Image (cartoon, rainbow, N blue to C red; front, side, top):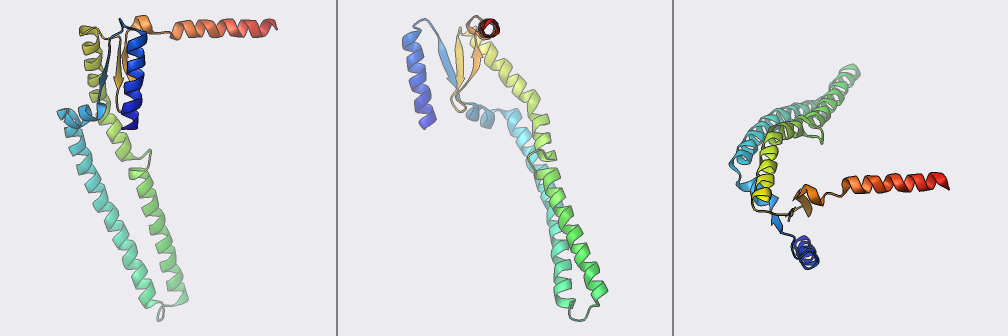
Length: 176
C-alpha cells in the first residue's frame, strides 16, 4: 500500500510538472495471475516441484531408516559396522543437501526451468505493453507493483545525453 501511495504521489507530481505528458500504470501481479500462458507455466512448475519433492522425501526416508537402524543396532553391532553405517549416513546427508541445492536452490533446476518457461511469455507481455503504449499515446507506463518504468517514449530517453555529459565530466577531470 505504501508503494502504491508513493507511486500515486510521483504520478501526481509528474502530471503537474508535465501537463502534456500521458502516464499510465499496470499491475504486473494481476497480469501474471490472470494471463493464461503464465497459469500453464505455473501448473508445469508445480508438477515438476511435486515430482522432485517425492524424490526428496524418498531420500530423507532412506536416511531416517538408516539412522534408526544405527540407533537401535548400535548395541549389538561391531565398531566396524557402526563406522560403515555412520559413513553411509554422512554420504546420504550430503546427497540430500546436494539434491536440495541442485533442484531447489537459488540457481537450481526448478528456478532455471521457471526462467526458461517464462522468458517467451515475458517477451509477449512486454510486446503487449509496448503496443498499448504506442497505440494509446502514453509517454510512460509504470508497473505499480515494482515501481519501475515498463514503457517510455524513446524521445524521453536521456541515456545518450547522460553518457555525453559523463564524457565531458571525465574530460574536465583529465584537464585538472
